[in-house]
Image (cartoon, rainbow, N blue to C red):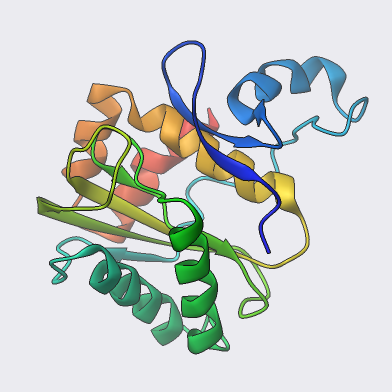
Length: 193
């Protein structure tokens, strides 16, 4: 069950995610000064380099195959205890509102009972995959993120930060040129600094 968050275009032009009409990107600006003083105060509870799986060349040719391929990689690593439930939760979320962002980024995600901790898989598709994106362009980078049912804000903050960072052409180019998990983690770790 999703609680009303959706893709937004933030005031500064960055794509972001919103929750009940509040841009997480804008809420994050105020969180350092107001930590814990309002319900939307965000705290860093994740490391961006906590990337569990990386597929440098997705074999998939469409959105649904790509989601299944990335989910399969997380399942192979033993991170998903019920792949069928996870897939259904992802598809339910995706049918509610596409997670295709801008600049070739796909952020399929779900909160699910199928995982006990947040897990993330990254896949690259140089040819591009139609993903029903905001700007209508094909997706070249797909992050699949699964989170347990508890803790909404860390899940959304992570996705919003990725969407914002991906709007930087230099960072985007570095991520798209990664060839292994260690390299992708190094590029992602720079988001924490």
